[in-house]
Image (cartoon, rainbow, N blue to C red; front, side, top):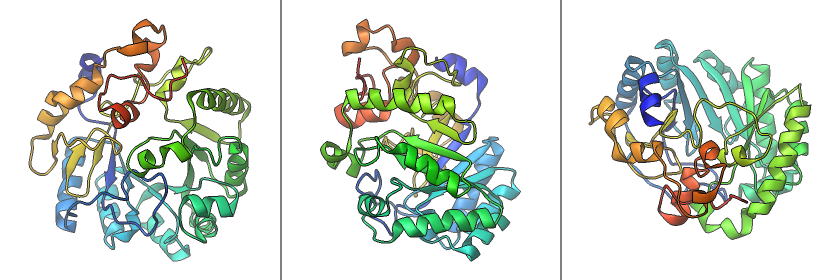
Length: 334
């Protein structure tokens, strides 16, 4: 898998970039809220943009932490878009009013994603540990639409919403959202600490995906997206992703606030530093990345006919719960 992949791509398609771990929220599932790292200066960040442009990385997506806690976000985005990068971000929406939305549009953002986890305000606010966050998030969607920016909505599926995701889809329609990401629960950071209260059982995940995939097939006015490779084990699943299994380390990498590169935000293993190490050496030769690109069936995956499709499921979830990339995804129902 890795040989064919590295022959095709000389760099990841996307860098998910955490400019800061700082955030004005303390969400129950957050992978990074308890993380700390030295933040780079604006000049250092612009040097990284130059590196990504030189390597012809098409997309960067700012996450966090909350990207807007950095006062230089607009300057960084303007510089990156001026270099030809497609710039997007994910935000909790609290700091996006009409003025901020106009600035995001002016500095070249292609799209902005807002995190909303329940169509019921009180549930969303409780999940995000921030009273009033639902109202601010919905207000952000409206302000972004008014500014002419494409909006997406990100919803982490958990016990609070897995039976009510249709209401989330309707909320997206009501506020002009073009795409909804129904994210799988990652079990990293606070998500690991609160796993027993928030995560679904494997059987519940199976039931959710069967229903959600049916809804997706019946929906033509809204793009519904998933990021969970374990879906590939479902009978009749016929989508053709660019890579099988987890895309992290193959199609995408993650940048921490200090410039360290990790396979994804949910796997806190630094494979190098983008300002200190040779990027090509990291991309092609990292033992960690190559192990992720060449996963081996273990445990129940050994006798499973679906392994060649899902490659053991979500690598980040396996690593978070067992410390081993190759262990079966704990969400797997087979």
